[in-house]
Length: 236
Image (cartoon, rainbow, N blue to C red; front, side):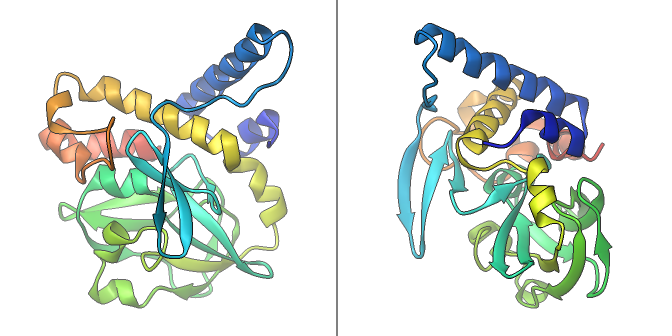
């Protein structure tokens, strides 16, 4: 499990600080309750679903593959080969923004900085900024997304990848990413915050059984769609 101190050092956002603080208290409460023995905290409503080529966890309606690392801004990272990684949107972010109409990604040779804006997609005819999950140089852009950006919605962890980056600092950047049990706890906390924002529209968006529907922000926020998206993607 990554160091929570390092997580706070490498990431931004007051909401993130609150969320991580909540997780720390929650984990140590369970440790105390079990007589000092550290236990694995089970996430309610978790189930596994099999899709071609990977085993995924379904956390409160959102898919969370084990093989990936996740940034608080809801972009993912997956090692490809050597110091090269692929980057994309996680299932939470693509379902939050809804149907993706286009992408605006940096050209090959552009340098990205972890935790800073560097990528964006277009939904509702509005560019949605994304935080780069790692430091590094863009070495490839997914050409398929120029013609079919909807692949980000239909296959966010596969054919919907955005860019590939050479990141010699990935080992250091991992301190600013979630993985394993911490990733599941983080996503469940985010889902809980979203649930509080959805009320009283809970009947229109399913987050408790099966995959969550697409376009959550638009269904709930209407004209304030962009504000809700920015809040949860941490690009306000």
